[in-house]
Length: 56
Image (cartoon, rainbow, N blue to C red; front, side):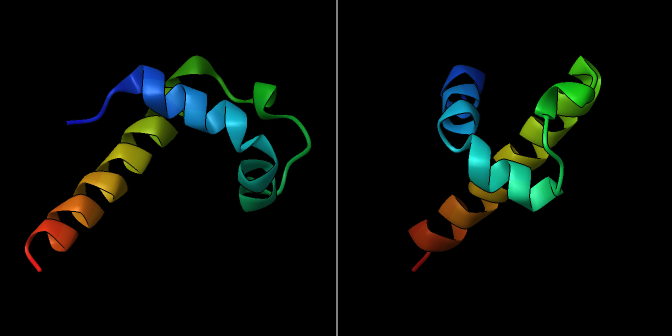
């Protein structure tokens, strides 16, 4: 399960890499809904990664 507070902290701590990833200068151009969507996608990727690692 994904903890949104941890993810948001991660997002803030890695703002530069995220900005380069989305190729924009300012993440605030996103709406809350878009940010939540990105977080949920990020969580899914992390969950999938954790599952694949734990199965090894």
